[in-house]
Length: 285
View (cartoon, rainbow, N blue to C red):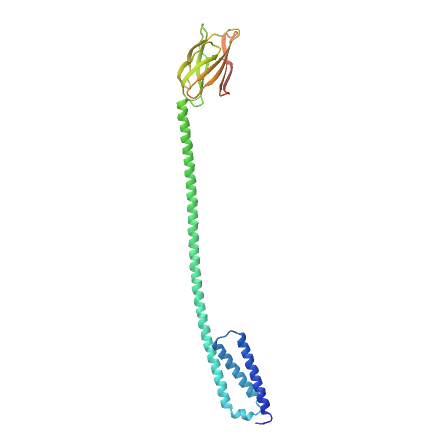
């Protein structure tokens, strides 16, 4: 080995080795690695440094003399790197297998959750349909109850009308026959129900007219009354009559005239209740 050149090559090899080691150390510093990866990097760095040293050494004889040792170092570093790489591969495979198993479990759980979600949706749909059906039944029941209530109300109104006479009323009209003593009258009922406790009295047209009790009157019946009117054939007559029944009073305006051509009496009737005209008939029999 040439003593003049040996220090220079040694220094160069050391510098390159330090640079390589610094580069690997910087790489490791930039990476968060585990111990096996660190050993792998160290083995690779060692092989790199040794390779640089051998390739740059000027004394090839010196290198050749120490070839077994150098080969042993290279082999040791290579086996160490391969062993570390194998261990890392096995660990990576185990971790990948674990991740795959976890992924399978997650997929299975996701499938179970989707199945449960589908069941919950189906249950919600069934409950919604049940709610709609119940609401429909409730609406139908309410409608039937309202119909029954309306029917009961109508029936109650009809019962009350049957008892009181409803909105019907009685009035006095010309009687069917004739009389030499005066003009006969008959009581008629306007309405569909029987009138109870019918009474009448003349408010105007007849002096000292008392209350006459007619009792109950049917809706299609007529009844002659005892009162005979005696109007003048030339002037006729005007009468105001108050007619009382169980459902309330009405006031009748009765006007009579004599038809000379027909030789008969004619009448005009207007009946009012609470100021409202409920019946009006023109001249006739």
